[in-house]
Image (tube, rainbow, N blue to C red):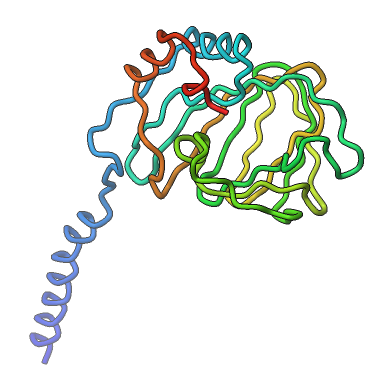
Amino acid sequence: MQMKKIALKVMVLSAVIGVFPILAQQAEPKPTCNRCSATYVPKSELDEYNQRAIEHKLVDQQVRLVDVGKVQVGIGSIYRGKLGQATGLENTVAEAVAEHEQVSEVYYVIDGSATLLTGPDLVDPKPRPGTLKTVREQNGPGFSAASIKNPEVHELKAGDMIVIPAGTGHWFTKIDDHIRYVMVRLDPDKLLPLKNEAQSRKYLDSAYSPTQGNF
């Protein structure tokens, strides 16, 4: 009887030891982007985008869009000029609220200041036309709206960051003089076309035309 117990313990121990390599193999982390290269964007390039925005009254320009495995990541250069204070929850610009259904955004403010309202409850939302360059190449399908019900109010200034999830409306109601920020776009459904350094360079080196602008 004692020998049977010892044999059973040996069998159980052997089974456990045999499982360890399998568990270790399953637990071994695997990169979600296999042997992918890092993407470097120098300040000088961002400054060129900013200069083009000022010269040609552009707002949103896509600098990069890269595939990092489970998601695509976009880098945008944004410049917004002075905007007067909205009255209550009304803005002089029709459909001033933007909302993106599948692309989330992260802003990092470089300089300037502004009042930004955010929230999911849009007033009189209308689908953004699929023909818009911003929809096709920058932030995917979504809605424009007249305003936001019960919004959160954010006073943005240089050095601030804000994360705007997909499905959350955002609305600049006041810009004191200007606001310049870098935007990181998260595109998990890989809706948007990739943009590499060579394509960025071609855009910056070409003569400006309205068809190239990002509006």
